Image (cartoon, rainbow, N blue to C red; front, side, top):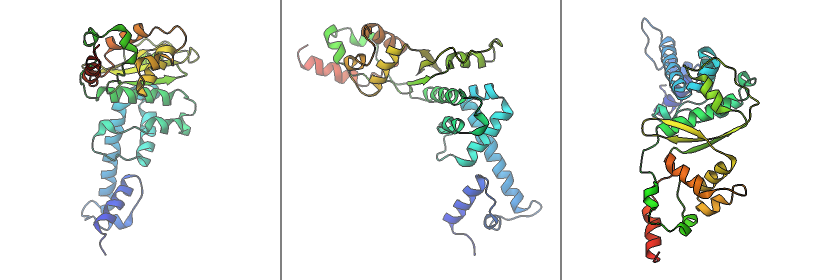
Length: 265
């Protein structure tokens, strides 16, 4: 009896993930090329396409481990995590966690964090541009009102923390980089990943700046977020830096200023 459509789709998905399904092969016409061979060709094409997509999204990981090692990691990941949507740039969210738990990467404890940085850069690159809050938007705002503002992080802005020097590892993996070793004991980093007009980038933050950005990401006001930082934190200087980097969304600003003006400020 022919498979029902739902069962046929489930069998085909299982085949793509690596399972051999005789019931599926029975549904495929074969001539000079047997049905099972036709299905294997399709599976191979899917794995190659998804592997190439992962290599594009995680270029630093591939540069560090080499093409063959990366292909093995990608193949194992694809076999257990096929895409659930059609946009390949959105495929791979679970790859960093997969690397963290994969036996083959056990001797590379920093690799999962490198993958997290690659993924954050990918998200930032594909994030909508949108308007960014700028210093000029706040020119008429009294200084004593600044701590009560509640700006949000712009789309694509992500804070990546790691006990490893990810910035140096990333720089050393670039094609033009000198072949100098990276000291993994050099200390951890707090990297703010952001969208730029034509690409994505990251900057290093101090512990206080990272605590402040984390607070903003949780929806706190500037004053409350500054309270997360260490004593002596310079709110004005940090806020000015974030404005210059363009990592604060302007979408809420009209509402914020409208509220202030309505109160007679």
